[in-house]
Image (cartoon, rainbow, N blue to C red; front, side, top):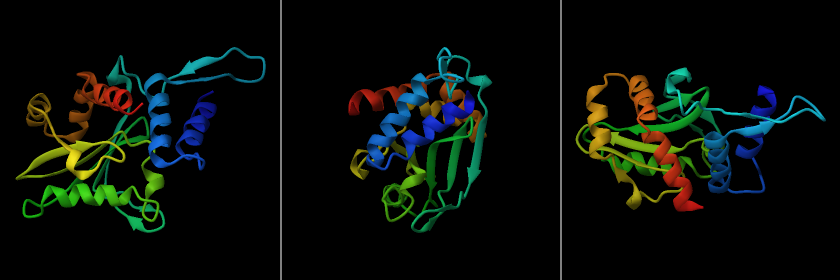
Length: 189
């Protein structure tokens, strides 16, 4: 049944009849609510969840640096955060002498067809940051001027964790990632 659920996730992520934004929205629904699959014809359907929102410690978290993706052009997002093997967050980090806007624009460009658009259907948060300006976030298709500063509550969490893996687990456990995904869906539906 897991392979059928993964097939449905990939089908929604790679639907050629929709644009990136709409593929991402459909993937969000599957990530948030799961997918119904059966073992075969005539068998009872069961809901499979890709992310355990109720018990985040039961998820598998991964971090990859400089992930090379071969689209129309080769690109390397700085950091990709995975939950259960699904890329959910991409971060572009810049030196303190390079503006955060450069990281945001880089992420926006990467979402275009002529770059690595096919990497982004599962991405729920797009983030950019540096040591002097902090961290900003948006979702797929967010214009640069609408990227938001990480809020006070999240800044407190960031300050308390030395590893991004621990930070992501905490963000899900405390509902920050979940609430961001819900807000995204409600605002854009």
